[in-house]
Length: 77
Image (cartoon, rainbow, N blue to C red; front, side, top):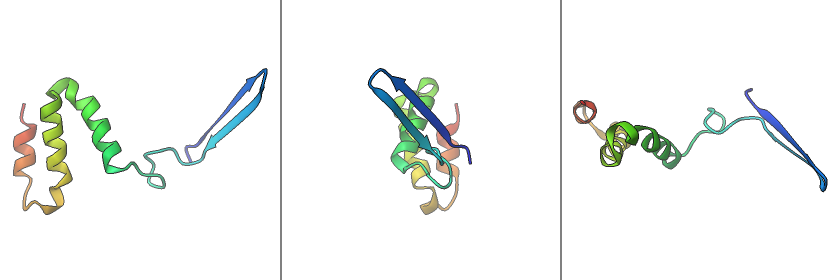
């Protein structure tokens, strides 16, 4: 496990929160929208928002594609 625990002590009391399986672990996977948002926020800095979104759309449909040609074409700089 790669969990974490945070304890916050204030004048009004103590709050404790523990996460045993962080978001993104196999036991607590990201949703497709979370994956797409993360990819877009990182990739758009290099590729631009439109191109990053285009690549994400291709990846989302990969299982329905007969080959990887659309993805490899989209990834060429």
